[in-house]
Length: 231
Image 1 (cartoon, rainbow, N blue to C red):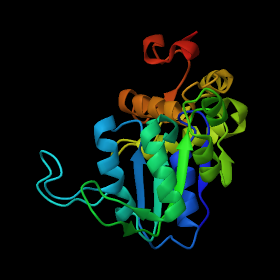
Image 2: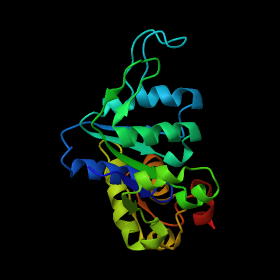
Image 3: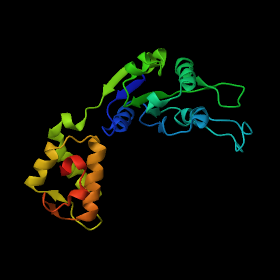
Image 4: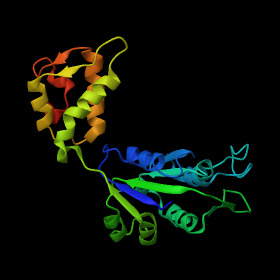
């Protein structure tokens, strides 16, 4: 049930790690509820996390459950927790300590049973030193640290990932694309700054433009390649 903190570059599969922690743990039968802390407007983040009561603000026409209540009995995945505003960091710390939430506009706290997995691409120790992230919250969420490895540090995975995503992105009725040796050498030499997400998107693009084909370095226009790979 311990809180876990997954760190790593963007596109390295932090949410997949969180899903695996959920699926292989005792809460696998419960819900897995993700929320991206950096994608929600500041004024709505508290309502998204903790819910609200009818009439609390304009547009609150009914009671609404927050992500914590939706994840009751399961796992709440707080993606990009490093982007959480400082005032919400204080409230999140209290929730993690007390295991109760106070929905916006409510007069009574609601007990919760949630396992929290947080993730960020930021260096939270540096954020703490800069005064942008609470030190006490950092130590509260960093019980089980997990680090995802960038793709450039595991080139032995590149060809297997190409094959996997070629099958995943193959158009209906078409065989998956494949990569000729010269193309394989190119992608193995590439640094993949966007990591696995970039690789998946590139295979999706190739599967759309060259369905069922064997790709050679000379068959793919440079304008269809990332600038680093085209170079």
